Amino acid sequence: EVQVVESGGGLVQPGGSLRLSCAASGFTFSNYWMHWVRQAPGKGLVWVSRINDGGSSTTYADSVKGRFTISRDNAKNTLYLQMDSLRAEDTAVYYCGRDPVAWYFDLWGRGTLVTVSS
Amino acid sequence: QSALTQPRSVSGSPGQSVTISCTGTSSDVGGYNYVSWYQQHPNKAPKLMIYDVSKRPSGVPDRFSGSKSGNTASLTISGLQAEDEADYYCCSYAGSYTLVFGGGTKLTVL
Image (cartoon, rainbow over all chains, first blue to last red):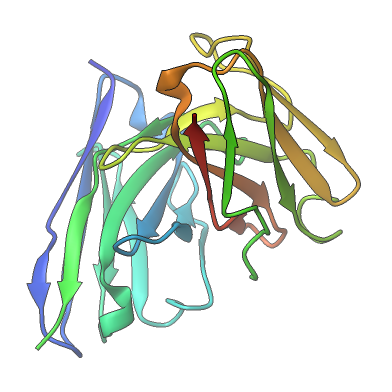
């Protein structure tokens, strides 16, 4: 089955760190760009970050630049998001999305919830 | 990276047509033909409905169509059905390898 499954969410204190994972299966992971998108409770979708197929090129939303790092391991078919210096406003469901190198998401995971609170 | 502007809500009766607008700038919607639309039911993952302004993935009913004029993209749903009730989001390439979403539109089928 073609799918991506996020994991690694949880409760973390402000200023803390968390690493999210997105495990891909059923397709050739290394052929696709991947993105992280987040959705705060009751709010809309917000693009967070993107990585190219080989992992050599990354971009970030201004709101997370310098705090979050996107990476991938094509041998393990896994996408990561290292989140440091977390703030209350980072609280959201984080989705990973597959991009066929065309600036849209043709496959989404079910998301993982990150809660930043003391 | 300002969010694209969408109406907060739209509504229509079964069988009718509705159009959801998505307004950006010449730096995003108006500058590229990389506009996509997503449907999201409560507590579910988003689903791709339209890409490249007007292309429909396989499996998406032809009741869903997309278009663009200047800095505004539109999603039209014809022959409204109860299952179309959901949140809809537009998304556009915004240059410098970044994307931007709209704020979302809640569609109510009366």
